[in-house]
Image 1 (cartoon, rainbow, N blue to C red):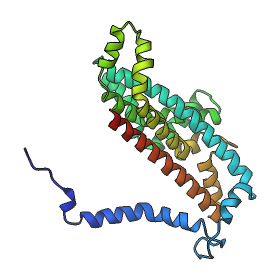
Image 2: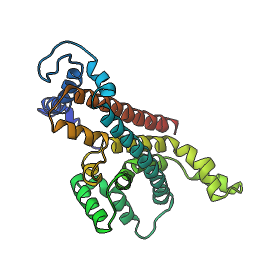
Image 3: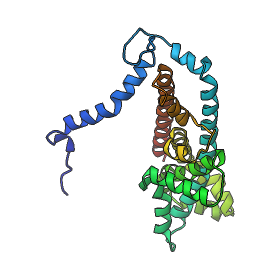
Image 4: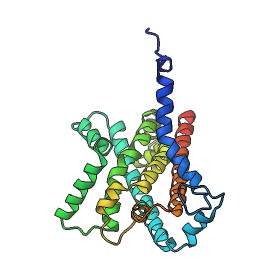
Length: 269
């Protein structure tokens, strides 16, 4: 058996890793730190203050951000729920359905939003809605989000299902359970860590999306990312840094929960 290669021993690996981490995370740290800046300047430190976090909720732009946040949260909840239901059905068909004609094609279609650049999906979605005469707005955002959230929900659900032996379902069927009863009472509870993990991942992907949303939202419809973008075009203000930090915190919490729940499911298996 060939010895396993430790890439950490390669020359320059540590320096390259440090450079990548710096480029990725230092801007986020700077935004988070300056969101507590007492000064209106985004470059000069004027002391520690939580004023801009209060401004997010009660300031002049608070109604705009409040409405946009509600749109983002409601769309993310509905989109992640619908995408998770579809992903569960797809995972059961792909993993438990055995070999069938078009299986590889079906998997490619499910994975397509992960492989195609998001800007391409955004343009194609806008063209589709325009061609069929659908007015862009809340509904078009929801449909678009459901579509591109499916693979993000599918991956942890499918991974969880692949680790569950089919003997549990066969035993239930031997005890005169119907297919629906075997799924609802046996398979679904065993899949639940993957289902919750997939829902959380789909939720945060929908909540943070900007490119597709910006193309299909229509006039007068804003989500939190598009509202932030519109405000930034007038100049970067400290309250934008506060909102960005809050969104970053929510994203970190949801992704961490998704990871931990998935790990707990793997250990329980």
